[in-house]
Length: 164
Image 1 (cartoon, helix red, strand yellow):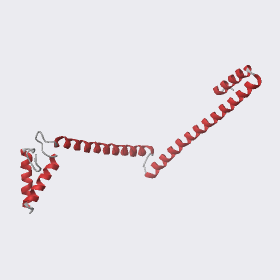
Image 2 (cartoon, rainbow, N blue to C red; image 1 turned 60 degrees about the vertical axis):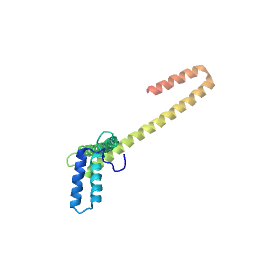
Image 3 (cartoon, one colour; image 1 turned 90 degrees about the vertical axis):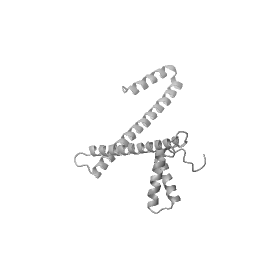
């Protein structure tokens, strides 16, 4: 198919191009410019020729699909933002102002960080105690033998359970 061939366009597309071309001529454009603008407009509206055998059908579909997926992602982000705003408004009772919402959010963040800090220090202390117990077990093993091992293990279990 030579360049500029219009055989892959439907009759409706051709009529539309003729109408656009006449309109452009009425506005004072040259015949060549009017034709070029008319076919460019038809291509933009329909994605090219629609008759069977024209390769532009699938290209037009994929372009439309990617546009819709981008719009869906944008809409989801907007929904998330509004949900966050509603949650902030609920957190601050009465007249929800920006300051009170911000303050409550900051307080919640501070509480969360404090809790994690407490958990971390508790883990560190537990590790140190385990290490001390392990060194104590090793010392008792070498000094007295098997009976000390048994009592050290029992003591460690009791301490872990909170009885000792």
